Length: 238
Image (cartoon, rainbow, N blue to C red):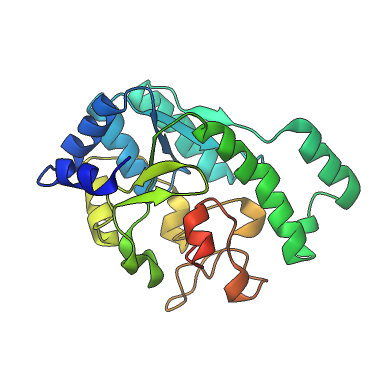
């Protein structure tokens, strides 16, 4: 797949038409991952409200916030469209918990990465397998390093193209879009959670703190990655 050719074909199109174009060209081989945060809810609305044939999925880690499950359920009710759940493999999860306990991720970076792999990375690999386009909610302003990225990129680890449809939106753009379209969102955002992952690993962020400060806050800043976006992990961008 030639990124420059795809970029040229998308040039001049609005975000809905870009998604429609990719969904038509890569029919049945395009997939969107949601964690039910602000950005993902905006993209879910773009896909479902415009009847764009893109498969929407989420990673059910088993450790999500109650508020996240509420948003998940309400989204199903509002759009009456499926959101496919990918779970950890039972044996891998059971072996880890039986051997190290349910909260081993607090004990070391290695343990935390093991938990992330079992609950997120391995299920993600299964979800992405066979697809050619992975749609994500990544935005440029979420970290300084992401300013060097583009809305379309090659993911070497997963051997597919990643498309970030709202890459150039600001957080205010996202909030305004959600308000204007009356989109259900996670109320934890109103309580200082800019990024919402597993409940034991996410806390609110104080004013002035880094965007990712609330994730794995007990670890050194340089080690805060889980590996979902493989190309970013290699460059220290997660």
